[in-house]
Amino acid sequence: MNYDVIIIGGGPCGLIAARDIAGQGAEVCVIEKSPEIGYPVKCSGLFSTAGLKQIGVDVSDSLICSTIRGGRFYSPGGEDFLAYSKQDRAVVVERKMFDKELARDAVRAGAKIRLKTTALDIKRNGRVSVRINEVGEEKTISSKLLIGADGAGSQVARWAGIERENKFVSGVQVEVAAADVESDVAEVYFGKSFAPGFYAWILPKGDVFEVGIGSTGGGGETPRELLKRFMAEHPIASKKLDSKSILEFNKGAIPVGGPRDTVSENIMLIGDAAGQTKASTGGGVITGGICARIAADAAISAIEEDNYSQEFLLTSYDQKWRAELEQEFMAHLFMKNIIDSATDPEIDSLFNMLKKEGVPELMTTFTDTDRPLEFIKEVLKKEEILNWAQRFLDIRKELLG
Ligand SMILES: Cc1cc2nc3c(=O)[nH]c(=O)nc-3n(C[C@H](O)[C@H](O)[C@H](O)COP(=O)(O)OP(=O)(O)OC[C@H]3O[C@@H](n4cnc5c(N)ncnc54)[C@H](O)[C@@H]3O)c2cc1C
Image 1 (cartoon, rainbow, N blue to C red):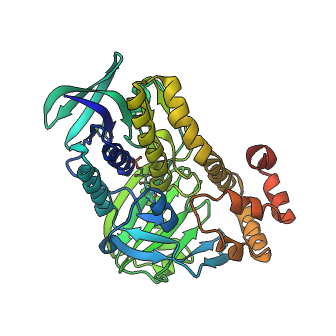
Image 2: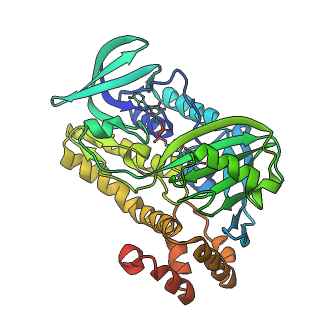
Image 3: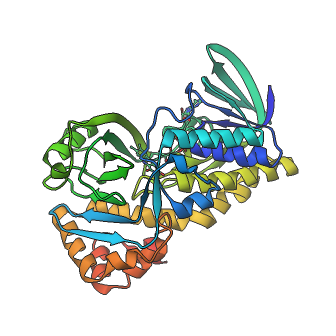
């Protein structure tokens, strides 16, 4: 079976690319190893409202569990601040059903989705042949262009020779029935003893709550053990949570090393496979989705020009998503590096500075939370904070140019 484009991976980024490619008239097929779109869930389903518009998604009201207006941030030593906006900033959606809506839209646009179908390997010979196992039967399908949307541990990246050492955060999350948390505020907890290298969160999701932890390991505890201890022993969070009311558990790896090279002859990578996640938050659906749309346009240009060379894909895809988002990814990496490098007492003193300098109020004036660069530049105009941050990183080189 031949297609114009094969997409390996039916997660949100693969499905967004499929929708846009099929919508422009090309023949596209999505290969998904799972028997069900959206399962297993590895996500909190927190998406900015600004970002959803950018990925062309109008989520059904029935999938929206909560609308979020603010964030309450806790330092390791218990300092806290609230950044609360007058407008809705984000929504928490039922992620499994969210992916299903994306699949529905892709199919309605003309895409084909082959479930329970695993890509086993590829061969390039002017086209790309993909050996697949579809419901127990081995076959080969082929296309002019292949898009790797196969997530954090991308095999397509390996097959394409786009290797590099990647950094991951392990994310684990449970859904609990009871928590004493405001219905429109996401809570974020920093501290190396509970969430080394990242943070923990409590998220209102309709009448349940998501409690999660991201960690880069350390101390000999598994992420699951860290989460259990966070829920039972964190001096503030444990008092808000009913850890006996767990309804669901999910986990996954989040790439936080920043984007990798994303093109090779006949191949583009998108989403987590391309490292297009926000290193400071772990969110990848919006940023990966924006890049998926750029990849879809590049695929259509490649078909029109009948040119699938690495050079063509470099200019039509790689350089375009970099122009749009690379600096924003660097801004997220900058924040992630601070979380990694600063000690708990240093984070406590940063919290005091942020509050003194009015940063929580400033935060509410920036509407696009996926793109923090302008916000960070504004914060770094405050000399005390710039001096503090300068101790950890060469900010001028890394961020301010
Ligand atoms: C605990 C946790 C919470 C998170 N919360 C959020 C959040 O609130 N907001 C947010 O934006 N992001 C969040 N993320 C990140 C988000 O889930 C990812 O960024 C997003 O799912 C990436 O989408 P993707 O399409 O690139 O890859 P994926 O969603 O990983 O999809 C890849 C797909 O490829 C399939 N696949 C892999 N290999 C093959 C193969 N060989 N053959 C066929 N199919 C294959 C997989 O089955 C999978 O369906 C969270 C992650 C974790 C772990």
